[in-house]
Length: 362
Image (cartoon, rainbow, N blue to C red):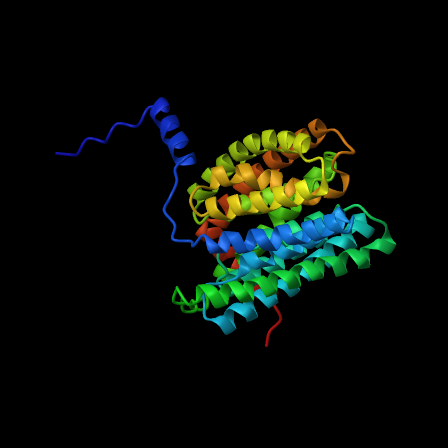
């Protein structure tokens, strides 16, 4: 006798399940010292910039200091090699973004190229979250940063100082934490470069580039947040995780934009900006491993403060908030479309075979 099919869940029950998954949290063993070290690395450059009357330079150095998020849980020598390599990559991404600032016609291909290369590197070396996110964010902010052509080399030098300060903080943090926690071994290399590295990198680059191209075509003002939202959503490990991350990012951004409006009323002194960036960074790094939607509430004001530090107080908060919301929605939607391709094994294998045909023979 054939078994009866289980009844399909009703729409209200599906909706309740989606809402529960969006707001669900998870356990983490991340030590509090790591968020503190990252917050110190992010806040210190802005504080120094405030003290010398160069808050904009401090914000640029603070973006470079985000290098510290790529500190792995390995032994000390491998930790320092990884974080110094990340610092060099971050500097290169910012430099490429600045080329896009000088030559706007190259913005889309340059950001797509950055997404391609950093995704390949992160997948090959098994770099965990945030993966290629901060590299793409760095290039995107650099592409839309204010400043003249003559100022761009100075900005890159300031950015490099921020990255180097993060490397120093990472070293002293590692000396401390390795006395209390055993390092983890290195992960294995990918078995199939085509399917695990090359095809996903091409898909990510295509959708990141498409997201920025659409934003430019639609006339978005400084749409640096569109490719960032797109690649953030693509970080989901499964298609369902991609879908949930899109919902979490939109919900978190909505709440975060309200926080932006409040912070822009409260930040009246340069040192207020340094304190806000340090506190927001600590909150993000403490919460993101436990609850992505809640972390997005803090990610949004943090990124906006870093990118808009030089113009804070000179423009109204409302147009900025509306622009960033539109950026988030467009980027998240294209991230879901990219996730459909990224998590389709048949499509990835076909793309890997196509790449193999195009690659030069040995």
